[in-house]
Image (cartoon, rainbow, N blue to C red; front, top):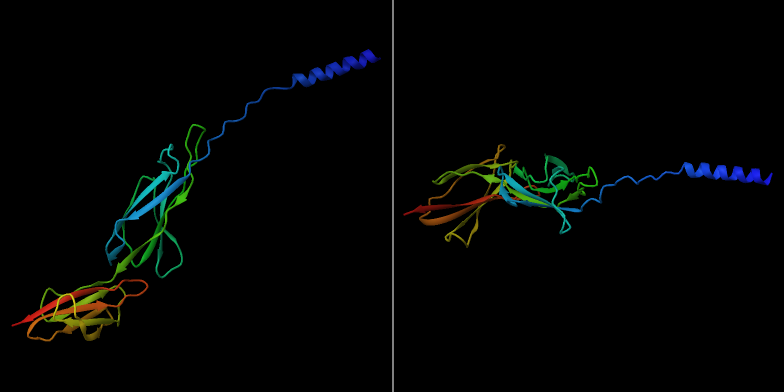
Length: 225
């Protein structure tokens, strides 16, 4: 009886050994490279209607890694009158810049890179990253004639029934005192007939600034012999 139990025990042991096989672990992708996104505008103060370009640089944080060429970058904007970030443009490659961007008022911008997932253990993967935000300030535009004593023009945008402060001085760069305050009409237009004072006089016209726009201004010269 003891011999039979021993044989059975050996058979069971042999069956267990026969089912064991070597299984290799699946290959896994390497950890993604950490990235940094930098966005630099061509201008930070512009006149209403002007455009800017935004230079974008997405690079890896390590010294040995290579910069990503795949993935998308998105330009986000937040206007001075809003607390919400909005996507306004997307590029199909981190190598591309954003060009011809037209801020309509004082606006903050930032660029987000969405990263890139490695397809295999031989490929590089990249983490997402976001640039620091920056602000582009927009000055209202004010038109004026090419010469004369009748000064007419228009202020854009959104400058209806608002003040323009007019100052005068004998000197071009200093000594200005208030002459008059005029207002635009319901279309943003203005008009002022300057006095024909003897000699040379310098005049300053300036609008008010607000949270959305920088003030607009210009200087004028009159001369009567």
